Length: 51
Image (cartoon, rainbow, N blue to C red; front, side, top):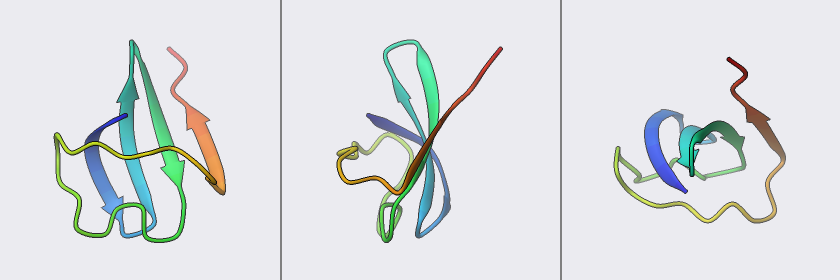
């Protein structure tokens, strides 16, 4: 998944394919910036954008 926006150290908005997701995991956003990749394993919560 590619980071679109870092909201906090624990929450990021990421894109996978055509969908956008809000990912919640301790420290997932720490040191990340737009365009970085994140591994979506052991997530606490994962929310999908509905259009």
